[in-house]
Image (cartoon, rainbow, N blue to C red; front, top):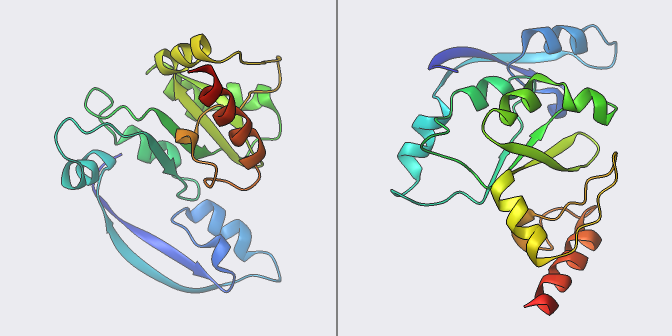
Length: 178
């Protein structure tokens, strides 16, 4: 959550590359995977990155964070009074909704009025509560206790292939509701 110089671990299988020493050590103990190289990389906060690349008063519709175990630190480096993305997609590797609801990422985002609206295998989508409430007025939304309708994604059907049928369904409902 601050500027730093971190060690980036590069594996023979790039899917395991990342900054987390704990995760890297765990993977490195597997006979199939090994660290090929390490590089020290200077980091910046999310707020600094957004300051450098976003115009004043520009709304962020969709923010995706996947930094292999340091996702919460990246979120904490944002200034949520300045930058409040409508939807945040973040990796949470928990098997059940109950575990996701009590995960520190969920608890952190709840402080800023985000709630879970969709989940894929390891990705969880959070949406600003006021935006989600405004959508519920436009479209009838089916929600059960353990299923969250992915009713977001800027209504672009190409964002994620496994969600495309649901996104298209919602998109079509919105088109007909107006």
